[in-house]
Image (cartoon, rainbow, N blue to C red; front, side, top):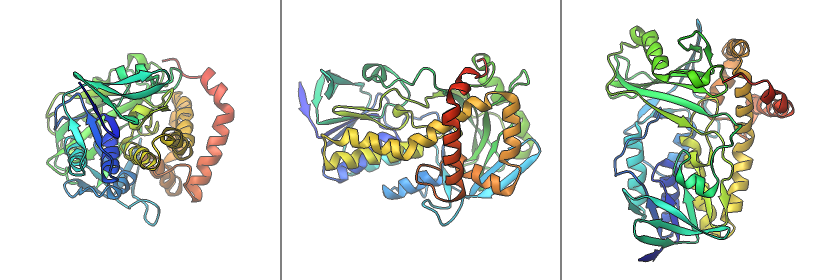
Amino acid sequence: MSSTADLLVIGAGPAGAATAIRAARGGAKVVVFDKAPYGRDKVCGDGLTPRAIAALQELEIDFSDAHHIAGLRMIANTTVRELDWPSGGRFPNHGAVWPRRRLDASLIDAATAAGAEVIWETEALPIIEGDRVVGVTAGDIVWKAPMTVIAAGAPGKVAKMLGTDRVEDEPFGLAIRAYVPSSRHTDQHLEACLTLKDEHGTAVPGYGWMFPAGDGTVNIGAGALSTMKGFKKLNLNKLLDSYRDMVRESWGLGDYVERPRAWRLPMSAQRRHGTGWVAIGDAAGLINPMNGEGIDYGLESGILAADFFLENAVTAPARYDLAVEEMFDGFLSTGRRFSFLIGHPWILNSGLKMAVGTDAIAKITLQVMGNLVDGQTPGAAGRIFRLTDKTLKTADPILRRTRAAA
């Protein structure tokens, strides 16, 4: 049995839903496939940066159900910096915490309302003819379309078929999260503890987070980069338990609502486009190495893919790849190189002292942690990013040779 559409999307998460919303509103016949059932939960920190809020606004998504966040509280040893998100820039001055079950449902509901067809509990795999993707197989149906969008998240079967796996020598992340009752669930700031240590006392390049959900709970979690010494032996459950014990009293925490769940964060991709297809969001490795955040990049890349498709399906993949390169690649590659540096404990400790040492530097750190820096960023943050990018690009061979032993 066969069928046709204008655009096929593998994955109904934020990135795939954003593509479907935009393309369906533009008049395209869109079909979305997801292996999970409707209403599935995705393991995530649930934090939405101002950049993500801007993308939701562009998609006309009602996020009044989300908990409003005014800024970020950064903690490094005994230093605490609480800063609001900046005003007057390209992005709103507020973020949110919105559990993924509700965020994803709102987005895919908007895609359905726009006219997209969503096929749940069905694995879709690309059909490759020569050097091009011409559609997907889903169950016993062959779907053909001018373009297929890969929004299947972290690498898996689809990634192996198209060669979008992460670049082997590049850093990646691991994270773990749980929901916990908290007396401060309505707090207006995210909290990030930048000075974590594992059970052996080794400094962890990553952070512990408290993301108040406003529903009686907080999303508590911890993440680490693969560049740290002893990464292969890192016990995420012990790391989370240790962090929970550290903040239990100050946040009035109860016991875990459910068993903590961990996931992998790909931060690179060997390819993100080809004839007849593009990869977006996590499937394209679009995750900030400095904070593990990728929802905003997923939404933006989904919008880009749809817009280029609506203009010209044939040229869309190459135009999309170039746009992503111009917007994100500089910042993300700089972040990956920086992760090699902070994999060394003494560099990490010195860097953290600097990152929150003064109000001025902390404001730049805030923009990095909030995904507010990219190739178009003006001002001091933009200048520092471009200088850092140039310096680390030159030092790249040394950084890789001297990386900490995992």
